[in-house]
Length: 66
Image (cartoon, rainbow, N blue to C red; front, side, top):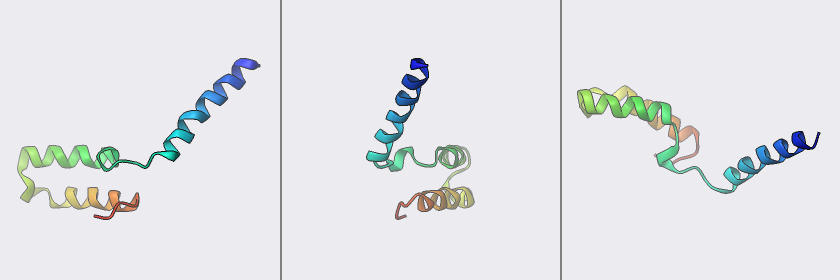
């Protein structure tokens, strides 16, 4: 039973550490960022407006002012 307690306490430590550190813009919305970046590289920024806006929407939803 002590191993269960240890596992629970170890799992709670990273969560509390994450709550203390604010999310950095570079690490936010990795799903939309990856797709947006791939589109820009392959097709150019002018052809990826929808993906760029989707990433901005995701960032705004997390509290970033974009």
